Image (cartoon, rainbow, N blue to C red; front, side, top):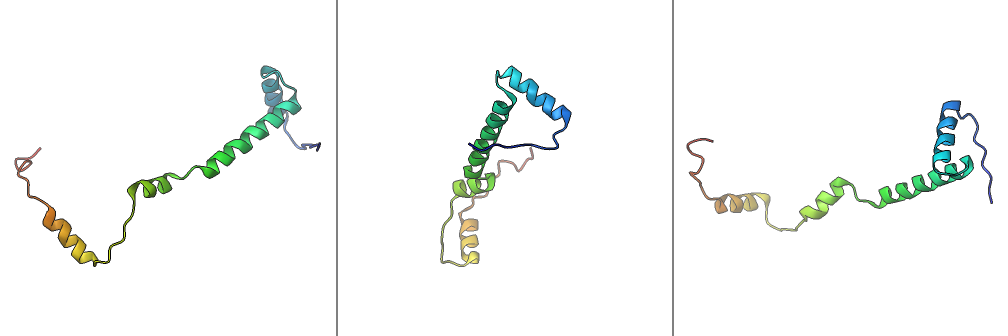
Length: 90
């Protein structure tokens, strides 16, 4: 089993670790190992979770169309219907 020595830790941080270890009923070493495991596990989850942009692209879908953009736009415009519903304003 490997050993790890941490140098340069300020007293305030060590005090927080010691307090947390006490609350969790662990030694400082056990608490540090626990925190490292939790951090690495959450990092793995974050790496496998798609970004919001990726999710949007997945939900939005995509298609292939061999028609020119102008033809597609003309088709969309032709399918629209004129509405008088808001002609008097909001």
